[in-house]
Image (cartoon, rainbow, N blue to C red; front, side, top):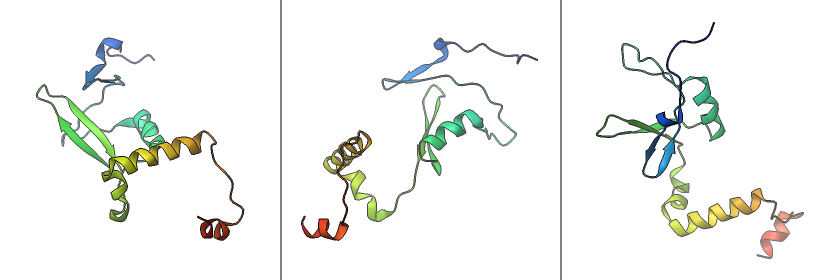
Length: 114
């Protein structure tokens, strides 16, 4: 049986700070104002490292924005605080993804010759 309800259209997408948010559906709120994000969003979140919490933002127009967050050890937080280090780290990850790597046969020898 076909689902009843609104037809989704591109006009339901919204833009915030230059970023377009795609309409993905409608969910009921329970008596405690909880909303299940559903399997489509869960599948998407698993692809981006299964966040453990969400930052929540509210607009004056009533929009709610959820930003997935991941916990990291305090000893690693310096990477994300230093813009230059973060940019270098991002470049390195891009190079690794594109195959610009050199295999190392002997790690001890490699580290001694740094």
